Image (cartoon, rainbow, N blue to C red):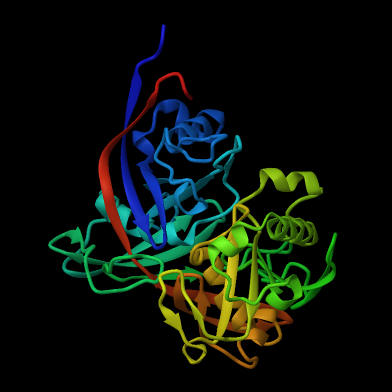
Length: 392
């Protein structure tokens, strides 16, 4: 006897350069309303994972790290916050859901969904401020969502490289984005150094900036890993040896940052840390064919997510870029020309992005009060998602 399909209210949204399936907590089946295997299995079935074909044909996923995501929103019980936002990165061909970090791109959609789903009622036309508690990492995100006639204004003329069509601009503020250290001091640099030296098998000593702002990220110089910084997705993702090198860097960095205790743990923590490589500005052709001039950017950045080069730039990694660029002496800051910086425009595979952060050193600890960037979000489909009733 086979179980019938279960219908679950859901909304399919684009946020920044990512897409995900959004749920209200109260709409989930009872077994999935609390963390655990049932919730993981439900989200895997929604997305179509694990899929040995790595295509996610039998689910809502798009077979990339940018489109293999689920989000839960609920009314927040935390003072000064409107909603709690929980994010699950669903592995494509492996049997796990990674809850270790945030998705900065879908943070945009979380702000818009909070209004769409009735968690926040706009006071009138203009901008509705949504205060989000990011439950994965325990941080506050403030989304400034444009509204008109009591609804989210989704259409507009804001252009975001990596997204084909323009939409309305949503400004995001990532408050105090550095993860707290063991002493609760909020240091962005878990080793206490702006530049570390990693011992990476096959590469030897490798200079790296290890930072926890936005999301734990390992920055290395492109030239030190055989890259130029102008690479597009296909050039890296089609090179198995390059991907293996970047994974070795990720494992070495994760160990140094204390995120894992053994190299074996890295296989079940694919979402964090991220690996990114930086280079001084130079001209290149983006994936759309658009020419990016060296004079239009401060530096080049390419980043990997879930073992593959990202087609644009993750929102959380953009926060890490902004924070690292604001601290003189990091590899990101040096690639941008060094010195004091409050904002940078960086080139990524799909084009450019401007991000800002204010950093200050207090009693020997570097801190960032907030990082700011603009994204957009749009509902693609809403209704119900269906999964076999015996799948979770």
